[in-house]
Image (cartoon, rainbow, N blue to C red; front, side):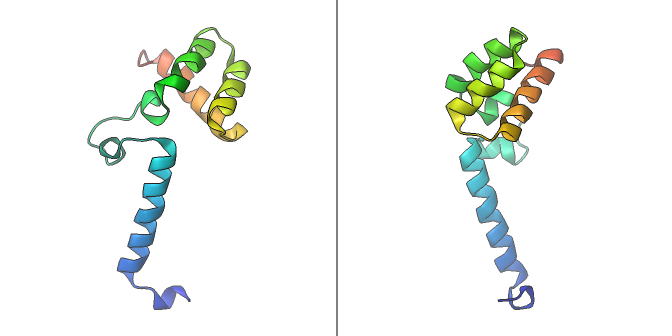
Length: 96
């Protein structure tokens, strides 16, 4: 099936379905995802993961934090590094 045979509504529905799957996978609150409130690092991962990982970030142990995040979530190295970087940034801005 080519894109010429797919209506705009069908394409939009497919994109929304993919977005819903991503939000569910990331554990993101739907209201937060649609801009009804600001997202924080804590919105993206559960506290059972955030707390021990954040302790390593606060302790300036980013490599150990990445390893722990990967083991707790099954995330890729790239995904975990992005989360740890966001955690470090939130500490610098006073939001973490």
